[in-house]
Image (cartoon, rainbow, N blue to C red; front, side, top):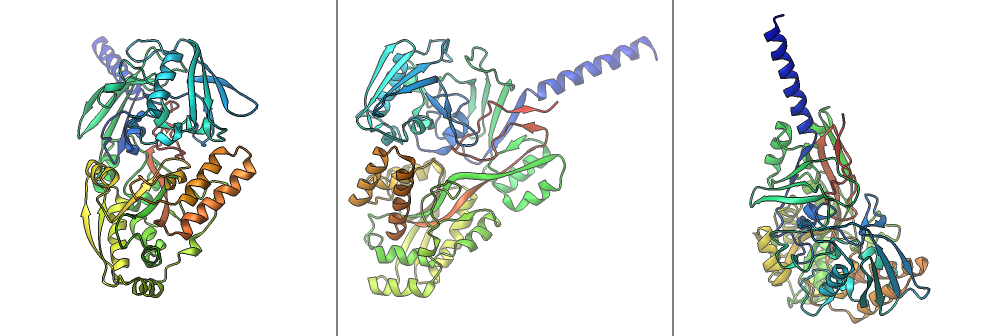
Length: 491
């Protein structure tokens, strides 16, 4: 071999090695929905947290992949004997992405902003129990509650409770500035979001140098992108009918777990007919959950009869309260005087909604309820349905953890107003004993099931596909997130 040939081969090997090393420091993540903004404290869309949770923004506490509450920006804390005072000890040397130091004053600002009169936080109730927030010194914060709250540390782990800087809070929707291990590089709207490793991160350095989130809503396009190697991982894969093909291909790993996503046929209680429990009960009896799971999710999903995750130890199976019974549905509609009822059904982009909506419409038609289906984009759903309350029925998966308390909010999008349930939720908040909380959770589940507030369909599974060489992706989703802090490529 000539010296020139040896040098050429050596150069090629070096280039190949550099290419592989570069590839192992980057990852391309597929997502079905594009977030409407990147401020998790000012929007309800789960897609916001799928990009930002633990990656860009951090809170005092955080969720681990098993749902456990772990230290975040607060490395430890003390709780008073009466359970009303939390003293958080903050991590040292934390800076925001713009270089500003993170101190106790930022925690005070963030929590006061979230609970303030003009708050736009989608989960403002998380902070309702807070009485005062004080900076003891730069690295110590004292939070005093108006009453004990057994879920306070859990609530502080939500993506809505992250710590912001007052200097950048107003522009976080388009230019997010957090304390996390990744920072925003570029957002090409309609296509992708690019992050890079934060070299000044205060915590354990992440393995990935660069992350790209690609938005692919069409199931066929998602399948093609994975097969072609254009995407490295799709944690919430929208084409479950193709999972068997990926399982048979050694290049891929299929990751099936659970989520906090209660998928419901939500009913607008402001509608005259839907304010009648007999009509809501009729709709619930018209639904065949298993047909929806088989037809829309290709068998993936767990039937639910209330708004609670089946994997939670306090879950009560109440599906027997609303079995598929078309004859009972017709009789209830006749008794209520609503035979020939016509309702609008708004369907957001996810496949579970679009595919499931067609099945639901057929099931309702079989008992005499006609539906006018409108397929709406995500931003339109948020504006029209969630904020504007301009809908009759909609299918949506609620992916926030332990969120049964939304039924205690009369101004929430489905408009359920029950003083009894609101009092029950207040009792849950004030209770710290685990056994007593479990009993209250059971009562709460039964209350909304017996009131037929919504038609409860199934628990959304987490079906993901990834390059088999990737490790560290979450199997389950205790919160809607693509936490990349432990993700790496195997050597």
